[in-house]
Amino acid sequence: LIDRADDEVARALSDLRYMDIIFVYLMLDRESVSNDHWLYYPDEEIIFNRVVEFKNWSATMCPPGKTALCLDITCFAGDETWRMTDEELTRASIAGTVRGGLVTPADVSDALVVRVRNAYPVYDLDYRSKIDRIVEFIEEGQDILCLGRTGVFKYNNSDGSIEMGRDLARDLLGDGGTASARNWRVKQVSY
Image (cartoon, rainbow, N blue to C red):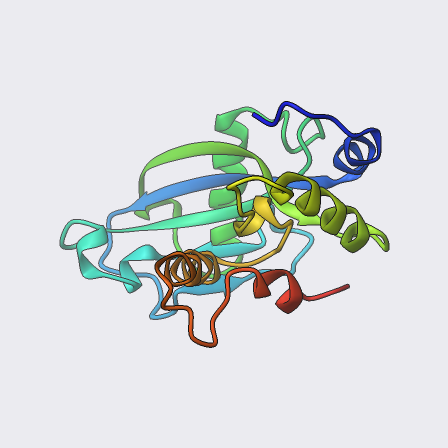
């Protein structure tokens, strides 16, 4: 969308990497699994690393008497996990939930597998200088502001992205006060 080019920016863009994610949704014939929003599983024997029960955010997220789990499987497109079939991913996910003490196979009434590319930024020692140069180039002389996980290569959650959008709206409306959308690059955690 920008009709100018810069070799340094092109190199910086090609050097940025993202992890991909596979979501396996398990629909369950039970009221709930946990009272937590997120459960983390740093167990090498379990394929997923996080479980989200959205019904704990709002009871309207599932029909009465039922719940669903979203299992996060991080990987890289093309690797062994990414190449697994939906059926293999579902079987491995159910086995992991059983191993983790969450469900029994009989609880599972249906499953859905969704693959998402470029989900999580992968930080290296030079990512900050690369992203600063890229964002500077994109925003320079344009009516464009870069925000969000992919806009500023920031590993953040949805409430952080919503806050960035709210701060940008306040800035654009002149109600910024102490909040500033551009400050998100400064707030970014360096690894």
